[in-house]
Amino acid sequence: MSRFKLNRQSGLVQLIVILVIVLIVLGYFGFNLPAIIQSPGVQTNLHYAWDLAVLAWNNVIIGGIDFVWNHVVMGLLWHNIVAGIDKLESSHGSAITPGSSSVSP
Image 1 (spheres, rainbow, N blue to C red):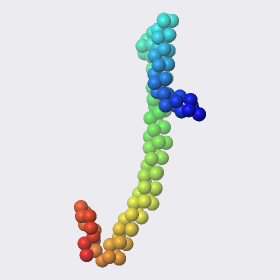
Image 2 (cartoon, rainbow, N blue to C red):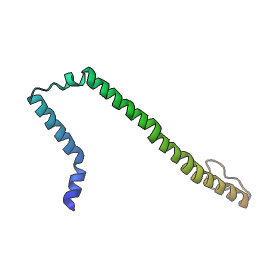
Image 3 (cartoon, helix red, strand yellow):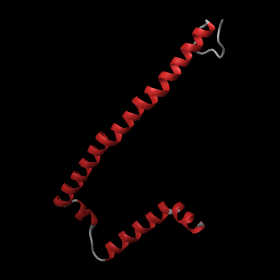
Image 4 (cartoon, rainbow, N blue to C red):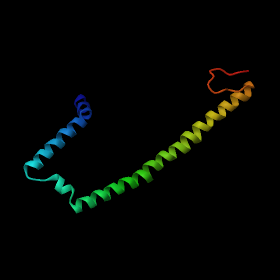
């Protein structure tokens, strides 16, 4: 079990080391990564992947965050907090002033 935890904690360092090794091996075999990446076919694929990522971000991720913010945080929590403050003010017949730590009579 402790070996599994060790592998999970060193994942980023391990990924960087593997990427460096892969780059060295590709360079040894004569692959020119800048030329490959700058080729028109790869550029088209990279732009397509980027457009998909932006589409997913704007429609799925932001949509989910927006739903949670509007319906959970604002819809449930914030309105209940405001209602509780209003109920507290009406029951004590006083107002809570901003910046004060106590309720004035």
